[in-house]
Length: 331
Image (cartoon, rainbow, N blue to C red; front, top):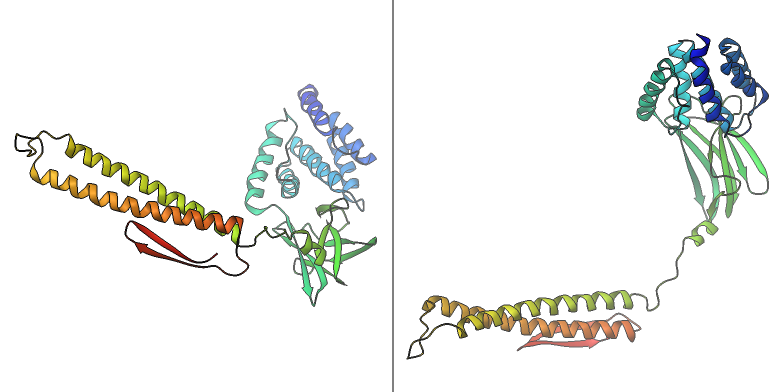
């Protein structure tokens, strides 16, 4: 039976060596699992679990190894619980290859469970009042396993505050115009479950934060965007005018090409069709001319708004005229 587990154990060690250096007890547990000394491995893992202040990577490795050890021993409930803790913290976690079904099956069951009930989610907030940051807080959502117990806030100036979670929220007072901060969500033994921001990329609240998202207004204020919009509308009007003009020419061409008798009467088309084509040609031609005028006027207005631009609000009026429109106003 011993030889059956040599390949999975080798896969386990290969899959975990790229992680951050664990504690000595975690190293011992790895070796014991490799040697199939599973009860002894679980004792080492229990020692890791009881250690104060584990970092997040150690915690993820701890839950992974616990799930593998319990699963190999056939302790299904404890296997599932270990993998649930792992997957609510790291939904993308994967097992090393070639592990037996007694380990992999509870893992995938826990993955389905965590996709519905997790992941553990920290939501940061800042309360602003009177131009100052009154407080910052972290609210923990989807903590169905009740792993989170407190939040360690790191404020600028090396100030560190640990605040217990009350009703799922931890809050610390600030009272400054601006604050740069990050936080760690902790277990009962101060192990790090999650981070909000980081020392390298802290969150910034207050006036400085607001200034960083300001963008310089475009030159010309409203004028240039409006000008481009008017220019585009002119292009659309001209395009429709071209289409209708082509339709009018096509109708006229059909009438001109029709067969006529010696008296000049059309014989290849009915009188009704000929009259309909003539009427359609005239209507399309008139509409096309109007649209050409509108398009030209809008294009001119757009160019004026883009290049010259007014100092105040524009006053523009379009008046229909025979064969086009009259554009008046202040630009």
